[in-house]
Structure formats: C-alpha cells, structure tokens
Image (cartoon, rainbow, N blue to C red; front, side):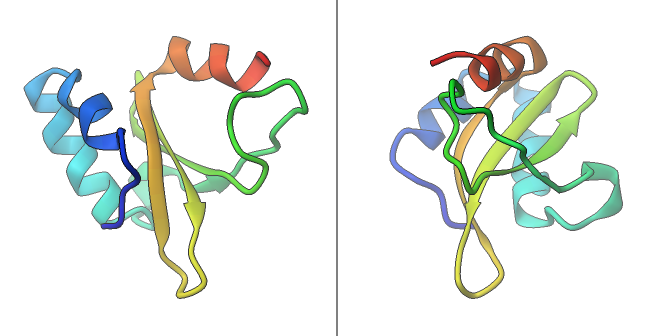
Length: 90
C-alpha cells in the first residue's frame, strides 16, 4: 500500500477502530464496500486533479492518486466534513 509522506500522520489521528478499517480499505480499495470512485475535482479544491476516493466508513474518506501499475498512492485520510471542505476550497 504505497502512501505519501504525511499520510501516516493523518492516519494516526483517527480513532483506533477507524484506523484499522482504513488500513484494510487502502489495501483493498476495489472491494465493493469502499465505493472506489474517481473524483471530479473542482479547480478550487485542494485535492489533486487525478484523485480517486474511497469510503473508509460512512463518516471517513481516503484519497489517492493512481499509479501506472493499477495501484494507488494514498495521500489524504480524514472525516467526511474535512473531505467536503478540502474538495470545495482553494
């Protein structure tokens, strides 16, 4: 599960049970329960243009960029309200 610098720090902020689910989700992002989808990233967003997201749980999201081998490099994880805020801001 490739991750970018800073991702582990974001992951560590999560409650332990959510962190465990998140680790499983980023190792298996194509599992149907995680709802993997390409993001339609607005220009004002602080997420990268080629980003994809998963639903870690109903209340948490993780975001990654695709790699050439079909995998993902995870760079952000947090709550759904944090996700919504980052998706809509500069």
